[in-house]
Image (cartoon, rainbow, N blue to C red; front, side):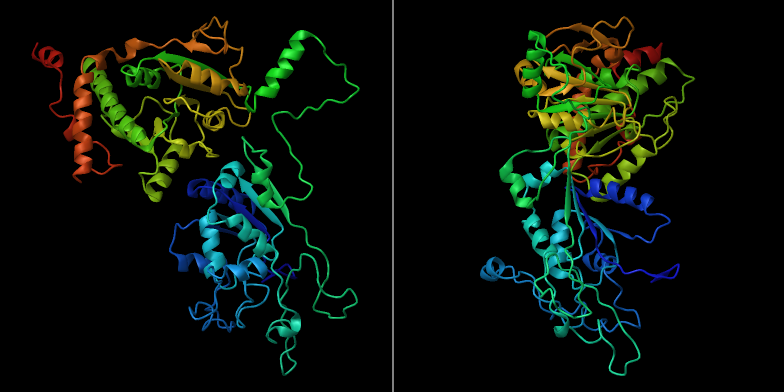
Length: 541
């Protein structure tokens, strides 16, 4: 393609790998914003579309009249990488030379590819013309998670594909890189050699013998330092940067040798991770029986602005809790409407939504769009707004949702890095946020162990606030205040809590029988005629 008198040659130079489809879609949208007005093209490979459609978005269109590839590019008879030939994989190049009809330099239609590991391997195996030989940047977001899971050995596959050595020019098809037989045209087929094995005295005009750098950038709030895991990346002269500690000290700085300083240094060594200083933290002690009701009081508390994200440890817990909250929330709205006949409050259960693997990709994407475009008018529920997202840790990694002011740990995380990623959904980019953790009886020791590995956040702050922001007395040596729950907010629900639990059983049974979809909104038929005896007596009066 020509742009401003320049010839634009598409080569895949940057590969961005992420562990989930939703996070990859988010990153892709950011790249799309940044490349506007430039010649760069960004591709997405996450399995959201059928494989053939995705192939055509990543490589040059074989149906163009000027292309001689239309008959062979997607021909299944073309040679493929033999995954079963382990000897060839270990001792030789696991990627055979491209079919004669495919240029040695590949047919990339994008300069930047955002993908998930599994889909990347699919294209390496099954998409002719897809090559990583020109790669300049490998970017891994949530790198510690990508390193913990093999994903079909994708790291080794990327390293091997990036080091692929194309055949020498003499072995290529004349139509790519040499004059045509009639001498009327010259077609260029650039290839990349990481470290040239050609003679330095070669006079071949088609070969530019110069090392091409391959940089690898790893990002995570909980980056691993395990050498065994990092060795798979083949890093050369790696550098480690921690954005939580940008200020550095030198040997000339005055050293503080006081006992307090020594204790602080020892504590900092023990604390592996950090939370932003703009995050306020609170705990809430509870029993298992009262836990859902205390959560509901937090969701109704106007001291905690929407949007709220509630984290659970299991998919089943997330779904059951979502349904129970929808039922209880509807009772609250019904009680308010009964006491105030002028209100226009709707009995909509869509204000509380679930995000987990039990939903389809399209359902999760739709939910995130609703969350990101939600209005800020808390008095109007007759819109598409979401006030609460109940989720698993699938939402904790990297997802950026505007307006998330409150994170609630309904289940105490078992690992410090899980706590860091959960709390990272709020107080982002210098903004403020609140994180509350519901600690059941018997979980205090687990909570202290997990929180003791994390610095920053609510440590020794917000303990002496005189304003009514929910902060209370410090009840443990973690110096994180206890939240003063307004239990009166759920007083009306207490009378019908048993009925809510029975209705939850009915809802789950309707889902098992197929009468109700897992993500389907609870309609008016679930509320009609559902009144407590006290409400019926009041209406009779």
